[in-house]
Image 1 (cartoon, helix red, strand yellow):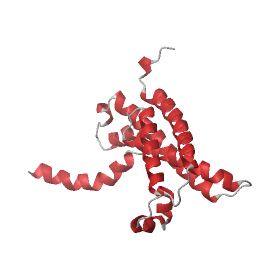
Image 2 (cartoon, rainbow, N blue to C red):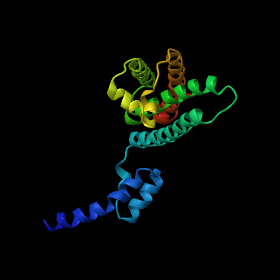
Image 3 (cartoon, one colour):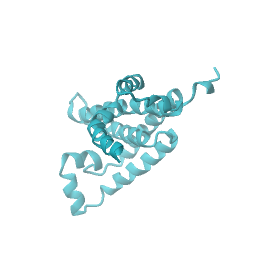
Image 4 (cartoon, rainbow, N blue to C red):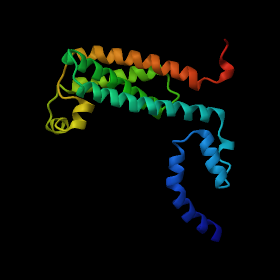
Length: 186
């Protein structure tokens, strides 16, 4: 009983430190754990390390897609109206695809593309429905960015293009990062 009661306050103090370790590379996590006398990296399998590296790339891709998506809406260029809507829709698709891949890392890129295309198409069709709750959500900036404010049939084409680009990116990333090195034939 005394041993467990001593470990509980220690674990609660180290929880913020441990959550920061998730963002670090495996080498830094191993170094930090060795400082504490832990041997946590020894038990991580090669598959877990590949998934961790894949998620790190996806987190970077999420930040980039958010920045480019918002930037495409804010930044004005000549032909801004012609360029802003398609670019925003494509980055919107890329963000959702990367988010789903981050949550379910071993789901095939093609399945992610189909799921996201169907769901975002349903959200686009939902813009035709003018319910007071949806209108209240659309009045906020986040609501406008996530569920949109007006129906545009051309968005389906932009969603399709975004899903195809996302499928290519995720497929290549999955092949390079998730596939074990022994599976490469060339």
